[in-house]
Length: 64
Image 1 (cartoon, helix red, strand yellow):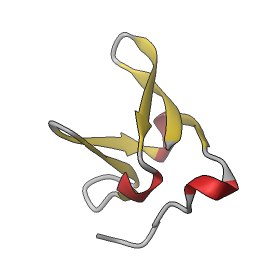
Image 2 (cartoon, helix red, strand yellow):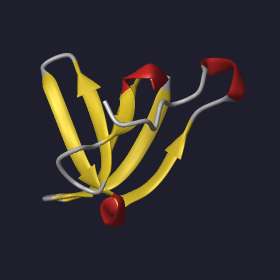
Image 3 (cartoon, one colour):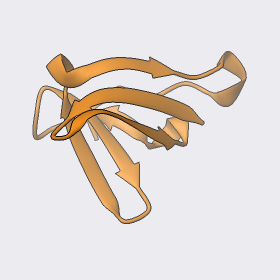
């Protein structure tokens, strides 16, 4: 699992997703997080940090 902290409309927010569900976003210059009920597209300028352990896998930052 990976935890992403970002600036949301109501202040700082966090999402925890499987590391394999993080890709480079084709819609914005940033990240795309696949959630159970859809996607979040986060511009790089709004991302504070992404945390995951080495054992949890690597994020795929290739365009999807």
